[in-house]
Length: 105
Image 1 (tube, rainbow, N blue to C red):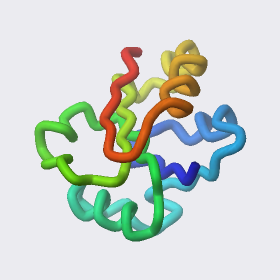
Image 2 (image 1 turned 90 degrees about the horizontal axis):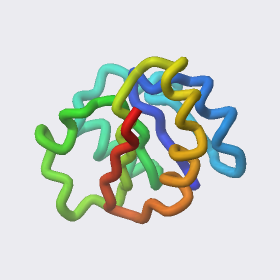
Image 3 (image 1 turned 90 degrees about the vertical axis):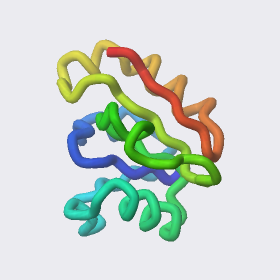
């Protein structure tokens, strides 16, 4: 799966998502894009999943009709996220196009 990390998603998480191609918004040159424009750019570039720590995304954006799946991590703390790697991998493995999922951390 082609995965995009939004700003705030700890980059070390990519080491735990073996078998997936992971890129950051920063690496793509998209760190300055607003959420709606970021979602559009990610879909146009063929990303299948956005992993973000933006807990307000589903309130700020109309996600109906999106092909991009969105996984929200409820913390930006790498230390806390490390304790939920198994749940995050499981969520990544089962998420499908257009779905929105949160991992409680």
